[in-house]
Amino acid sequence: MEIIDAIILGIIQGLTEFLPVSSSGHLELGSAILGDQKIPEESLMFTVVLHFATALATLLVFRKDIVVLLEGLFKFKWNEETQFVAKIVLSMIPAVIVGLFFEEQLEQFFGGQIVFVGFMLLVTALLLFLADKAKNTEKPVSFPNAVLVGLAQAVAMLPGISRSGATISASVLLGIDKTKAARFSFLMVVPLIFGKIAKDILDGALTYNSESFGYLSVGFVAAFISGYFACTWMIALVRKSKLTYFAIYCSIVGLIAIFAGLYL
Image 1 (cartoon, one colour):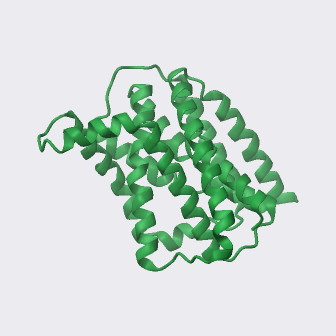
Image 2 (cartoon, one colour; image 1 turned 180 degrees about the horizontal axis):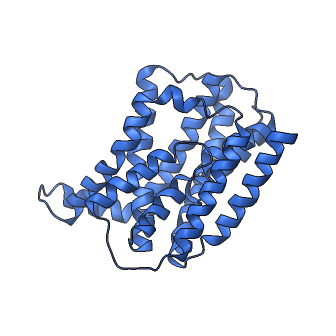
Image 3 (cartoon, helix red, strand yellow; image 1 turned 180 degrees about the vertical axis):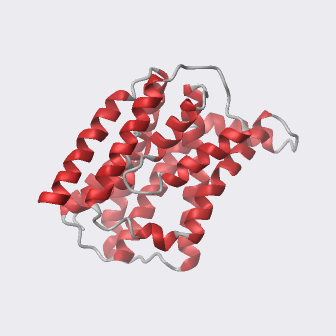
């Protein structure tokens, strides 16, 4: 992999991890455009590094919230912070089940399935459009809501379905306050990312050699910086109900992907 390709893919990951346009879908499209020919083990390592970068960016953006949550959690009381952490754990269950028991089936949707990615981007566009039209409320995330949002996150494991778009849209359509929906959406994925990295390490699925250090490093930096700014920007956009712009973008990219996959 060339350094410039690593930078481009890192920026794509950083932006699309938080902006509701599907990071997995855009990485699939980006790899197809760049003619990505790296072997699967190297591809997995690069993907893990990029996700680790965006997870760290999330921790940085929500560092104050995380400190408050940890302080409340270690009081060992059923307080607001402990309940919030419990909701995050609850929301993780559907994605964990899919990741553990349906990993092989899920992988079949990756690897150049451009037409499928295009259709899933159209689904993302519809969700964003509906969410943007929903009225804002002061409603917090409840335990039943956490399960439903978790199901949306599990579905978003498909390339082309935006994780942030699906979870934020599901939350808003359930009547949850938009700012709280964005906060819950971004925090709920962090344990999953670290859990997936740990699983890959324990399974011995990750390979590393000194030749890959350069592109892994620049990809990490690009994903971290772009992810930090994208996360901050996205919180403001959700609060101001500006998701329709992303719905239009996903529709355009989705239609282009479908056309390219069928006719080019």
